[in-house]
Image (tube, rainbow, N blue to C red):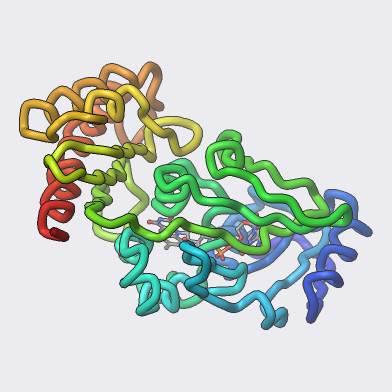
Length: 292
Ligand SMILES: Cc1cc2nc3c(=O)[nH]c(=O)nc-3n(C[C@H](O)[C@H](O)[C@H](O)COP(=O)(O)OP(=O)(O)OC[C@H]3O[C@@H](n4cnc5c(N)ncnc54)[C@H](O)[C@@H]3O)c2cc1C
């Protein structure tokens, strides 16, 4: 199918993009990589009256390692971020998450920031953002603001962005010393969206106990979710197999109402989420131990 007709604007600065969005008062949409928006328009699930294309705003195409963060601009393609040595060195969880997204052709066009703004609850990067307490830098007519990842994702395909706002960049904290990480998922075919997935990080102290533990799930709610119940089981404790089994069980029990659809039942998602939390934590533990 073809999309309904729309006006098309190609600003060359962020200010111009914001002004165009403000002019159209909610009828316009930002176009980044187009890997989610264009299929939705073709299926007539989205009918914006105007598109504000970010692709000529070259000032937004960057990946920077600065002030303890990896900062990714709105035009950085997933593939470029996946291949960035700064990302591999400072926050490898981002690259691992991107390698689970679709196929290279999708990642060549799709942007990291576009995936966050789109906020598919089964997407990998929003869950990584929530697990790492990433910061979203938003620019609009009334200036710039910074939103914590946990507040940014509101519900299914809905984020804390006003119609005149652009998500300018995301700041992921760099990996702390003695921290291991993992992202695992179950999908029907390689490259499909996950039926369920888990992100975990574990930081070990000198005694081998977990000074920090993060667990986030995707594909099991209307947005990516942290699982404090599982994190509490681990904090201050040695993450041995029994402790990790208890954390997995806590994650499974905490999932009150996972979605049930043609792809998987709620019961299946709950069970798989528990299994994946265990798998992710064991992998994170191995990496933390190996990091000295
Ligand atoms: C075959 C296929 C398989 C895929 N598999 C996966 C997968 O397994 N996991 C996964 O996570 N994703 C998957 N995707 C989606 C892909 O990751 C998209 O690239 C991503 O979701 C959107 O990024 P984009 O740059 O293409 O954004 P677009 O499609 O251009 O935009 C998506 C939405 O975000 C808004 N938006 C984009 N950028 C901004 C911004 N800077 N500020 C404000 N709003 C913005 C747009 O207005 C639109 O509403 C798949 C896509 C395809 C086609």
